[in-house]
Image (cartoon, rainbow, N blue to C red; front, side, top):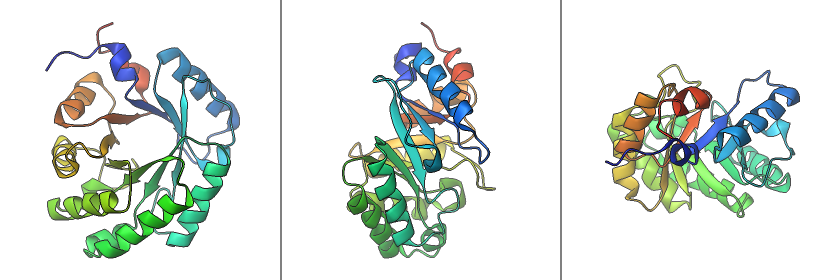
Length: 219
C-alpha cells in the first residue's frame, strides 16, 4: 500500500471533542485546530450547535450518545434538531441490547427512523463493535445498510469493552463492500494504529489526538 501523506490522512479525520463538560470555548479551539490541521470535520455534542465552521471543515454531531439506549423517536427528534441546526453529519449510536439479542429488525427500524428524520445529512451508525460478536457486527452492518446509512462506525470511545480494532474494521469493511464508508474510532492515538485501521479498510477516523497521529505521516 502506498504511504498516505499527512494531508491525505487529515482529510479522513473527524477531529473529535465529546467530553460531557466541553465548553463553547473549547469547541472554538477544536474548530481552529481542525482548520490548521486540515481535518475533514469536527465532531461534537449536539448541545454545542449551531456553531460556525470554516467552509473547509464539515460539522458532525452525535445522536443517542453514548449509551444508545434512547427510544428511537428520541433519537429521531435529536437528529431532526441537529439537521435544523445546520450540521453536515450525524453519528448515531444503535441500541446495543438489540444487537446483542440479535434483534436486527429493531436495529434497522431505529436507524431508518433517524435517516428519515434527517434526510439531508450524512449518517454514520456506531455499532460498538468491541461489545459484539463477529456475527453481530455483520448483522449490525447489514441493518445499517438496509436502513440507508452512509457509514458504519466502530465505537463511541466510551464503552468499557473498548474501541476500534483492526479485526472489527476489516470485518465491517468486508460486510459493506465499499457501498458504505467505515469509520474507525476509539483508542486511535498514534500513526501506527491509524495506518493499521486504514489498511484494514477504514475510510474515516474519529480522533481526539489528531495532531499526534498526523505527525507520524510524511508531508
